[in-house]
Length: 272
Length: 276
Image 1 (cartoon, rainbow over the protein chains, first blue to last red):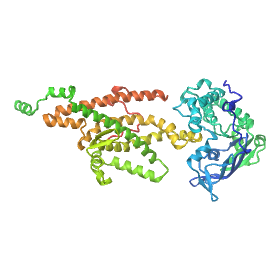
Image 2: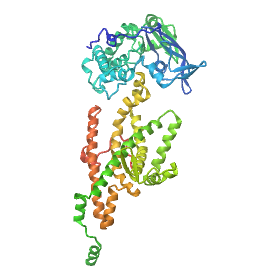
Image 3: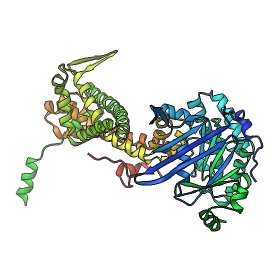
Image 4: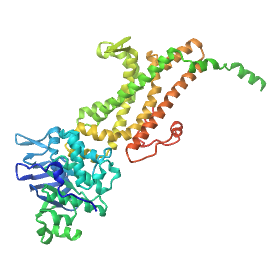
């Protein structure tokens, strides 16, 4: 059994309190891959400490949408704001122009992301993965970053694996390192892109445990996941996407017991 | 039968063992000097070639179309024309291109001065090598999972930082084996500098031949020297690859010395091996 601490965020000195209560605000986001429209006017608001779980069939656009939030994908319409700042674009005479690379990089510092396939850096140890960005991007001293890194590893139950390389870790362990790596940047928002779907069943629990703990500690989170148990237990809102549109946005109680949309009912009946 | 043997022996030259052994084991100062030029021209050209190759590869994969075009033209031209021709163009061409001869008899670069022909040779070798390295580095970069770049970006890393810290170190796994082959080639290709009067090893051998009229002994002797150089390099390359293989955990067997020297095992990765 993996020991997950109950003060993970204390390792990074807590999370920064954003000025506004609204962390994410997207309006009418549109995204095209060539001639196919994958996002068709998505408007979503996420408040501080809120946990939003996004579900939907594959191809519904949920992964694409959260990748737009830290500008891993460009958008062709609408706008995305995090902590009141326009992401990826600058407004010039009422038109949106893609921002400079350095500015986008700066915006991403405050948005943590966890990937389906972990994407740990294979040539660095677990600790090396965690301290890399704080040192090189934030300019934290090596000593301080190492202290924070070790504390984070300890708290996600991997204190003894600091010097292990990713290939020496199980999938669940790798994903916990990946979460710690994102947290080390003290993000105001965490994006999870199907964080458990590449894991063997027996390892899903330990990753969800860390995510639940983060939610409890007040982290703002957008989670793309098919873990309905997690959604039911942790989410403040469950959002259903279908063909690039939000067709349902409700509390888990309502969402799972009385979905309003036919597509949601059909989808739930298939996966529950 | 009898007469034909007689005929054959009467036309055969006598192999001068003494000269051959002396050439190898009591090398003249000129040959040592030539060896030195061969080694440092190889090392310097290879290093510059790698640097040029990295920039060319990055330019070739850039979003900017002008950069891509420049890189594409460069690779196209320098892989598409003989190095020998490039060497002449570079050595004799600078007065036409820049109005001044960049490679006069003696060139002074800060604290060191060297012969202009050597500099021209190194420039030609580096630029030519850069075109080949460009493709090798490109293959290396493409071998790194896109997820690595995305993870780096998501942590707020800039393009330069992502390349330097995340992508290129991983690309090295794929780049190193063909890079070793490239350097092996380079050690031998430096002999082309003889045509622009650089007194590297082969040119020195030509000088000895001109005096002794014993081409077979002399050129076989210099072949032994080249073989020694490439053999030593093969050993070093094996050591480098073993260390590289040890630090990363995806273990693939590094072929042993005999396999490497005799080419008994197929090269790994299948990306490099740019033959010329």
